[in-house]
Image (cartoon, rainbow, N blue to C red):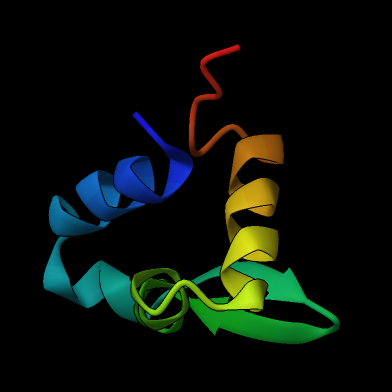
Amino acid sequence: MKNNEKFLKIYANLPLGLRNEIIVSLDKEPLTWNSAYIEVVNDTPKSKEILQKLVEMKIIKNDK
């Protein structure tokens, strides 16, 4: 399973209230689960950074 698929699976199981919480910060810009979702769904360059940070933070398990 790809990292973006793993993210979407995690996101789908989050309680609605938790989706407004900050999950990661890129270039001193805090991103919530909702904003990260928009980036990942649209496959933006920023989404690659988000997914990498989530792997580093072990929120997404890397299957290496």
